[in-house]
Length: 486
Image 1 (cartoon, rainbow, N blue to C red):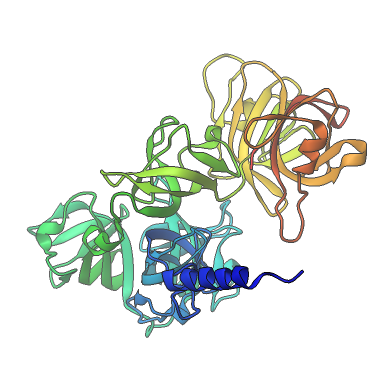
Image 2 (cartoon, rainbow, N blue to C red):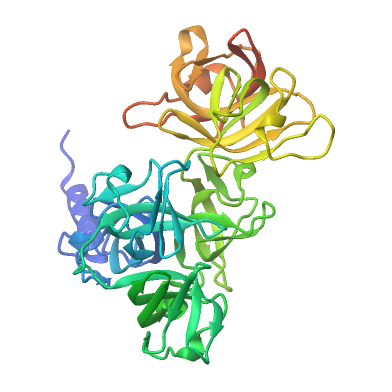
């Protein structure tokens, strides 16, 4: 049906008014650039610059890097700090990017028998795992003592560095470099210690940024030193005071900020803790992804999105666990102390050098030995994460008594016709119609509605994270309560 002329003229006038006022364009047909400031730090992924889930256009950004790399040369696994703009929290424009590698120098030792594997550089212990990316070297097995590398990563509360990128570099690829907090400062001798063992001689060093000096040094101050490493002595030519250098990334009240790193100083939720040097506060309104508030703990790697308050504390609107939190609770049916494994709910769980074990010996007291967990007698709670198809335990805790069996994991199979969900590829959970079902907002839903919200793991999908309580018997888990945790 044709529109009356007056109506058509009215629509044209409205369209012109919208265009002239900006309604999605800048008046020239182009989308106007974003204006809301955002600061972000963490591990980037190549594809423009993807940082903490946001896609930033780095074309016009100032890149600060002692090797002089451009935005086009930034690569996956690098740790960066970014100042930019985004109006939707999905895409944005980068104005400044600082490359934040942790170390550059020659490998001193390699331990391929440790779990996880590790090497040392200037006394710094570097851990590698399935999330470590390699450049100019095939992988961990190709590393050798004396290989010069640049390492990016994130530190846990104990100072261990989890490498996100290991790049083999030559003598031309920047001076030796090390980051860390100052200790054992002796201004009369112009030396201090980094990472517990590295002596830094800064007698001939210049300080950066402008305004920094020897007076800026103090115990606990984070610094980046550049110069020449010889054994456990680092002769510095430059000392960069990180807090002063990073002032541009501190942000302002009411601005958005994202940070990725390991939790430290955690006591309770809601509460305050640290993530990669930033003070974070969770509230009752904080949303959690790939885990729950109960999964918050020291040395758990997270990404926090939120808004800075008047004291520049990052008030978290969302906390994403960088590895989905996996929990099993039930009777330990097998324990292999030499292999460091425990089996429960039919699943094999692997402990490593970092696993915390809280056992209850038969004679009373506490134990950190897996030998004090007795198969077919003791019930345990295991918390950890998946590395490929392996469940790696971060904590194994013996319970005082057995209660309901628990699964928290990503769904790997979905059979709605037979009311079955699968986990770890083989653990089947029946989902009776009379069980209690809740969605991600903790609202009661029907079994059919619950199944409609479930996605099984696939090539591009890690599977919906759910938590089940029920009973495990004869190889099958019978669900009594089910919750979506994504």
